[in-house]
Image (cartoon, rainbow over all chains, first blue to last red; front, side, top):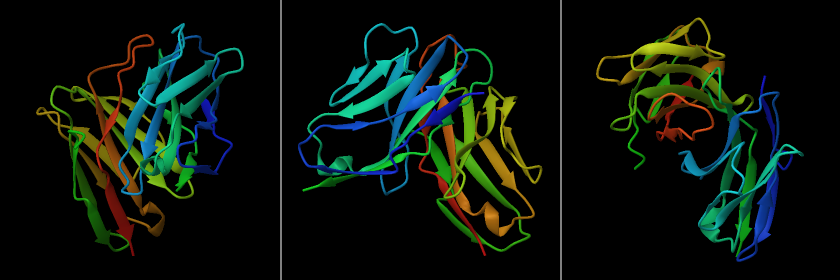
Length: 115
Length: 117
């Protein structure tokens, strides 16, 4: 079974600073994918970034990057130059390559950007 | 707009009743997933359909059922509703089945918020 752990229930960050949201995962599979989603107060789930377990480089998408440390089983999300609009819940999720195709989500981190 | 359409956006009903939530996937997507988000359980996978066929079941109660129709839209039926069924129900779609480490990103709809009184 897969498990995602997000140990930071809430974080407060000053606007324009960088922020790292922690995510660790547990799986015995060698082939898997890691995802980050953002959920603003309006409720929708917005895909941010994806990292495959065999990808050699860390994924980046604009101000988002994924700090993937396979040996430590961590997939932290880094947001550079935070903005007020970044205030939201952030979920880390995982899917193993073979078998059930669902995404398993962590409990989320509520990020608040302070002006 | 994500391209995944869910109706209704909000629904208030009483215990013991039955409701149907509807989802239209993004154009071209063959997979539909249903998730339940509640304060105490977080995001829970309910069921996955691919091109009309059930592919996987998660923590879906026997009182709940779903189907995907030939036009690929999906419905989630919730019956004998209880107070604990109050939650945000998400539908998500993806292009196909996950292959290897391919992303096959799930695109979520805006959700249907169910309140059972």
